[in-house]
Amino acid sequence: MTAPRAVGARISWAEVPDRVRAWVERTLGSPVVSYADQVGGMSPGCATRLVCADGTRAFVKAVGAELNPHTPTLFRREATALGLLGRHPRWAGLQASYDLDGWVALLLDDVEGTHPDLTDDATMARLTAATDELVAVMQERVAPEAVVAHLGGGQYDGGLTDMRAVMSAWADSIGLLDSVPDAPVPAWVRAGAAGWRERVAELAARPMGHLVHWDIRIDNLLQRPDGELVFLDWGAAGRGPDWLDPLLARLERVDSPWFDGSLASSPALARAGDDTVDTWLVGMGTHLAVRSMTAVDVSLPTLNAFRRTESARFLGGAGRRLGAI
Image 1 (tube, rainbow, N blue to C red):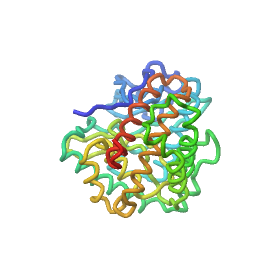
Image 2: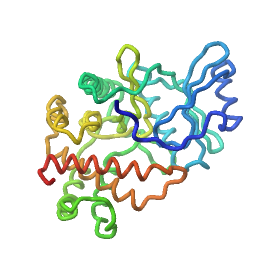
Image 3: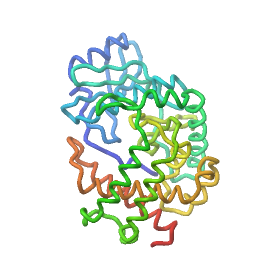
Image 4: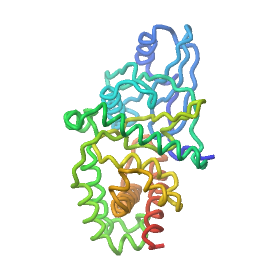
């Protein structure tokens, strides 16, 4: 069985400020009588299933800027994305949001289910098909001009992520390799750093007009009892290419030949081509490696280890595909 690799240190529902918990109960219209804190993901805030006295169930995420100054922005971005998308069985619907005095909370539909077993071929096939459906629904519901109108304009405003800026930062990280000699990057990447930086910068400059989830991994997936998959955690959502989410859905197996054979089953990935996939893997993997040595993250003690693990998977997959290892 696969399990979440991103596991941080969260506060409990009982540690959320009284004013936020009171807002949740007012919004739900009934007092909370039991709760179950969840693990997985890197947020230091709570992620909790709630049950109210009248039987109402909901899921709440809440975080304060004193826990981590960036995480409230991710919650605001999730509210932006879900507000644009509306409701659909493929994701947990947003019931209400709270944003006051540095604390942000999202009240979401509680989804019955567990993380899927992505070692199972049938489940992986279900995930890739569900991702194609997700991409189609997002394109149908959110026009490119709406995505542009909601791009982030400030550090904490909660606007959508711009993948062009994200990928440009990856190119910058490749340019920093000489100054970060201990970054866990293989020799073949360092030897070709100039070329890889140019390729990633070109990738960043391509037109991008689609709403993307941009964080599809086992931590952010639930499988309902009937087998249907639900995409959670929209805090990274933004503007990107149509092949991005189909690529992310396959990354659980990036270190195996299954990954290579699966690319052709996505029309968007087939159009993008192998060079795009390899460039993305090198850019993302190198950026994570550099960040694992240079980033200082408040109240996120496991994040740099996660970065190193994911970097090794992505760069290892790229190296295998390119015959470099």
